[in-house]
Length: 122
Image (cartoon, rainbow, N blue to C red; front, side):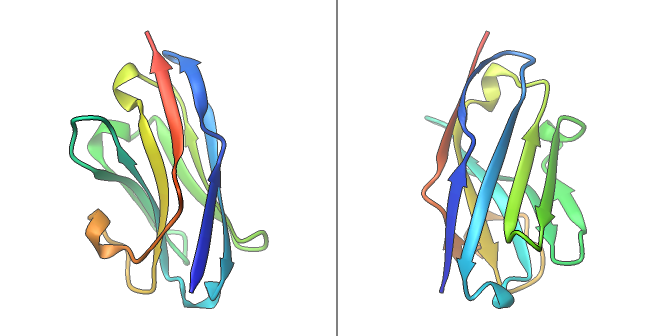
């Protein structure tokens, strides 16, 4: 089993920034890919960014050039640096992990954190 705990959410004004963190524990040797997913009220869930253990990344088009995903293997921590935030980025952000290759869909991920709220005001 893998446990994931997110932190770093909050309320910011548009064009502001936040750094989300996700601390992983448990059977972390089994993790091959991690990602950040978000769920906004009335919107479909989407996997906004993913990263492999080797450092390969992918992003959904709406966050490219604004969000950066990274991981610190020594600290077993995943990050999401969010810049130039927009009101439409308002959502609960979830950390996710899986033992398989990088995936763009939320359903492919097995382990989930409890989520952290990001609210962006105009």
